[in-house]
Length: 92
Image (cartoon, rainbow, N blue to C red; front, side):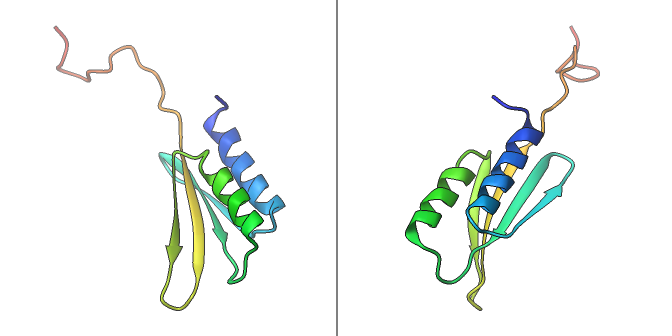
């Protein structure tokens, strides 16, 4: 499985290659990718876009009452491994 940063970049690149304008934002625990979806999008582009965002940890479509649609995906960042996952005060 590719690193989270590589996955997020690949998703954004494939959405852009499909003709969608993308935005990528880094957050503390995830990277978000958003793409504005035009009103008339051919079915084959919809299929490609859904196939692409399905590779993310979470994805969805935000539709507003004004007709705007934003396809989004979130890729969780890797959590650093530690020796004690139980936390302080939880040791035997």
